[in-house]
Image (cartoon, rainbow, N blue to C red; front, side):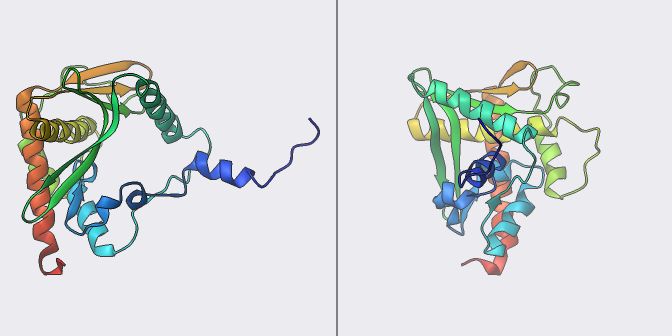
Length: 232
């Protein structure tokens, strides 16, 4: 083999591994519309603030992961895309777009995997090992409105409050399922698969789907309100 060397392809491969070159609006150009909000972003702890800052900055939302090789994100992304790739050869639909258009704002997102034969949405989430270690029970979103009311104020979270990630996942997946149901005029179920050292599945109830959808709508309304006179 001889000595190690760096060809013209070295930086190309390195950039792919470190995911330095992607822009969200290049992957999903519909998000460039000033009144179109990302469901995924709105589901975050500080999603309202993130969405407002992004729209006001007039700057690309760069998906940057300047991490060394072997970073958890690279592993998670590889698992996510590996599963999608395998399922794409069957009857499953990958990265199916969903949207909502209102008189004031639009919502957009992409479902990881959809089984249209059985009206079932699959969302894939790869997490660090301990994130769900203290909560093995089924997702309980009965207090989601109270929780999200606190989130909407952008307050600091207690570091012991580790199940906020479950709420983020549920808000996103539940909203996707609700929009799928509206688009296809039939109820959709949704399963969230959490992948780390083991595989866990959480299936949302119809009530949880509606709660999640309504909360994302409230967050979108708040984004629109905060943009105020800056709307174009």
